[in-house]
Amino acid sequence: MLKISNKFKIVLVVILIAILFGLWNNFHAPPRFIYECPNDYKTAEEYIGDTAKWLRDEMDKNPTISQEDLLKTREIEFQTRGCEHSKWDFNERNL
Image (tube, rainbow, N blue to C red; front, side, top):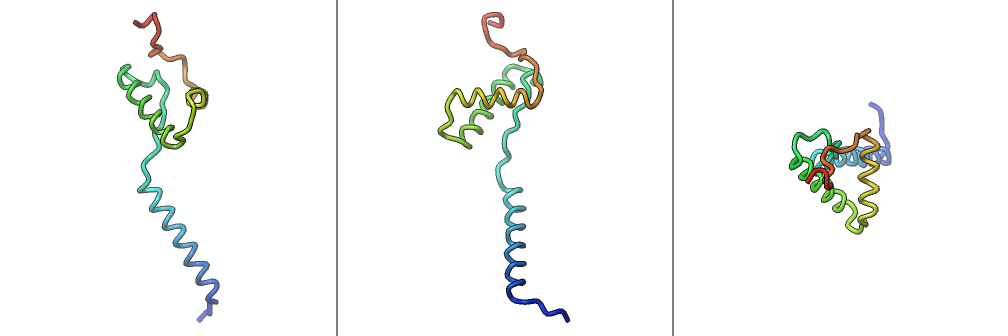
């Protein structure tokens, strides 16, 4: 039978534990909220609700984030997903 050194056994056990922890954490960690394009929503209420969830998620990840950085992050999300101008743009024309 092939003789395996104790050092190799220890390294193998550590690697297996790391893999198992990674798998466990992947299935037990709360999922990150995925921000969708505004025009993907059927109603303004759905859009507002998911925007609030996204804001909470971003602020949970970085509690000291500034309003300016939140807006920049949101703009990056829009650009990454190729979003069009929002039909839920709440300004004077929609009031």
